[in-house]
Every structure is written in structure tokens, then in C-alpha cells.
Length: 289
Image (cartoon, rainbow, N blue to C red):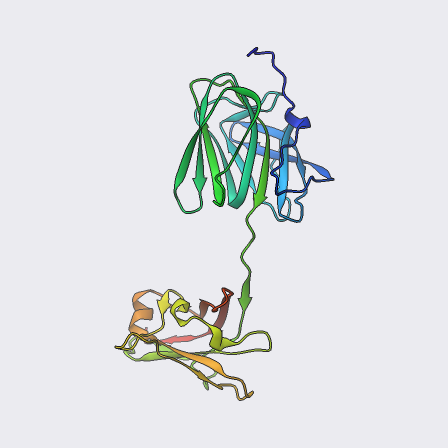
């Protein structure tokens, strides 16, 4: 392959089959350690997919586009043909996982690409020499970045298509620590239980919570000797709808540093049977310093 090869670089926008072709390109800037790029970056489509294509050299900090992960480069420079690998390895990382990634590249020799996956595993594939070749991330995996390595710097990254993983939504719900108390005093020396009511609303049925997922800070609901949880439905606020009352061991809360000097509130988290994540926060007054 001639070193005078040309490849589409900024003009070519390689998109995953699942991504719609973007109709609007936005000029953005992206900073890399030791090098900077001016890029043409599409606004994400309905699937959260956008394409980065490298253009003329420039300087400045990369600006994120809503719905897409921020992208950080290391070990690359802009050559006019694309992002050239100038050190081994060259890295690309995303601020939050992407559902799918496709990169278009040109290489004079073979390289290796290692995908960094959200489950902390990696997957390495071989990138054969070629012009305008493409490679996609493993099907069904969420990707946090990738590394390209080889024996020389004759590797050019032409464009990068990224489909951002959806941001999990968390439903905020009301909770009442020590129902019936206004200032919710908690004594660090107590050997008893701390009661928390998770209140149902018009949009949330507290009794649908999977109690095994409920945490107050890092502490789980107390389990009885038979393995069941100390939790029960009860109309705590008198609105005629069952709430969920759960109990936590004070010693466990202190041991986990969920309760300590200076703590002024506690946050409860959990997941309903249908997979909805919830959280709620209430104030506490710490005693027994």
C-alpha cells in the first residue's frame, strides 16, 4: 500500500446499521494529550448514535453533545488523513458506556485492537492492513473504550461511530425515617433497629419493591432467622394506600459508616419487581458522639 494513500477521513461517516444517518453536522473540538483535533460531530439520532469525523488540525477542549458519551483520546495526532497513531498504544475512552462502536481505519501493517468492556473484561481482535476498513465492538456488549497497538505508527483512524448506552432513570420516592418523629434522632451506640417507611404515591407502589435490593446507604434490610426480610406493608401516612416499612440494624449502619458523626441525611435505594430503580432521602440527627 502506498504511503500516499488517501482515505475519506472527514468526508466518510461510517455508521452502525442500527443508527440513522444524521442530517446535521456540528463542528466540535476535541483535546488529546499532546495533540488536538477539530472534528465534525453529528448530533445524536433517536437511538443515541452519532459520528465523529476528523477534519483540519485545531486546538481546544472537546464539547459534548447531549445524549452522547464524552470521548477522550490519548497517543494520537491529526495528520489531515485522520487521527494517526503516534505512540503505542493509542487509546480512546468514553465517559459512560456505549452500546455499540464502529471505527473506520487505514493501516499499512496489521494492528491489534482491545475493547474495554463495562463488565471489566477485555476482548482483543486483529486489525489487518487495509484502507477504509471498519471494525465494530462485540455484539451485545457495552464498551468503555479501546486501545490500538502495533509495530509502527502507520495507523489512521478515519471516523468513529458511537451509540451511547441509555442513562438509567431513577425514580425519586418519599421515605420517612423513624415514622412519627420530626427530627429523626439516631444514637450511634444503639443496638436496636432503625425503621424506615417507603411511601407509596400515585405513580409508585412501594409494595412492589424487591426487598433484597433495598439499601440504606450500603446496609441491607435485616433478615430473620428463616431468611425472610423484616419488611411489611402498612399505611404509614394514613392515605389509604399501603406503604412498605423496612428495618435496618443500627450496628450494621455504623459498621458500614452509613451512620457516623456529621451525617445529616440517609439515602435509600432499591429496585422494583419490574426493574425500576428508586431512591429517597430523609434527614437524621446523629446522637451518641
